[in-house]
Length: 355
Image (tube, rainbow, N blue to C red):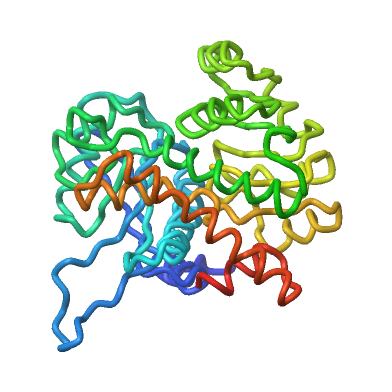
């Protein structure tokens, strides 16, 4: 009988495969909090004089998702890598990280405080913001126990949900996509948004205000009602990915563009607020290209949410974050130019430019 490999050995093999720096499994016995934290990259450890830096920072959100710990780990690994890439796109020397709180219980004040304790114990190494599955109200409770939470409400001197700035950046990206790839004005395009939450809803508002025909879907009936009220054509969840539109914009969980969904897609472009929408980057982009569908790398087009967190840490304003979101336009133009010049895909070009 084959002896099962030791757990520690398996984890180190996984880390070698994913080329990440740390995987932390955290449990609070008092609240039964279970959390997976992945550090994908660490910035330069020493200064020019060779001294160990005291201000090392790794950045990434903390989300509440997945009852299965292995699914949480897989998600955290991919999301931490996305943060490393976004830092490169934005030109900042920070590491990429992500924490996933396993959703094996209902959220409570004690649980949220326990998440805050986890953040606080790292004393600023991990600068985080509430992500998918956590509300701004949850963020306030987490913040009450930690000094290292970004993108909170204005009451806590934060700049509010980073979803607004993510949507602002997406709009800059969509404008470039329409002009340089689709060859028509944004107002003449159609967009399907999967997920009408922190990113999808503000994106829908902006698109509607620009005259775009918008289809949308969400698990929340309340969100669907709000979207319908602003002019979104609400579509059943199972059908939203397969609308005949110019742009499909995934704005919820990752991995939804895969070998099963790709054959049924009817869009021309995929560009969204969700991180890691492709289940298998290399294989799925090839599958999309066979169907003449262009994938716009997520870490380029949705990096303005991370940008807002950086502006907030520097004491900046909402207006400053919105203005700086134009970097999405410039970076996407670079990717398109590089792609044409070197005959590479958008994803290949972005990885060449920002790795």
